[in-house]
Length: 210
Image (cartoon, rainbow, N blue to C red; front, side, top):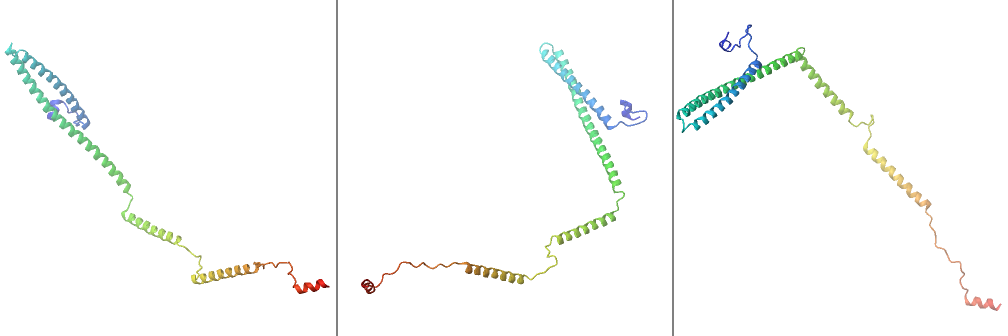
C-alpha cells in the first residue's frame, strides 16, 4: 500500500487506483470542508480581537491571551489558504487530465472508425477512379458544347446569293406596286360649261328681218 493509502485509506484490496472523477469529487469535498473551517477561524479571530480591545485597559493579561489565540487562528487560517491553493491546483490538473483522457479516447475511437472506412480503399484505385471521373466530365463538357452550337441541319447556303435573291424579290414587289397604282388611278378632266355662247350681231339682225 502506498504512503497516501496508509495515511488516508485510499488504497483498495485489488490495488485499483481511483478514477479521475472520484479523485476530483474527493478534492471538492475537502475544499468544502476547509472553506467551513476558514469561516469558523475568521469568526474566532474576530471574537478574540473584540476580547483584546475590551480588556486592553482593564485586564492586560486577558487581552494578551486573546491576542495570542488570535495569532494562532490567523496562522491556521494562512495554512488553510495554502492548502486550498494546493488542492485547487491538484483538482484542476485532474480535471484537465480527465478531459485529455476523454479527448484521446474519442480521437482513438474516431481513428478506428476512419481506419475501418478506408480499409477496403486502394489509393491506386482511387486515383484511377478520379482520373476516369475527370475524363468523363471533359467528355460531358464537349457534348454540351456541341449540343449548344447552332446547326443548319446539314445545309450550307451562300450568304451573298441569298442577299441577291432578296433584293430581286424586293424589286419585283416594288414594280408590282407601281403597276397597280398606274392601272387603278382615275384622272378626271375639268367639266365644260353647257351654256351657249351669244351669236354675232349681224347674224342676229338677219334672222330678225326674216
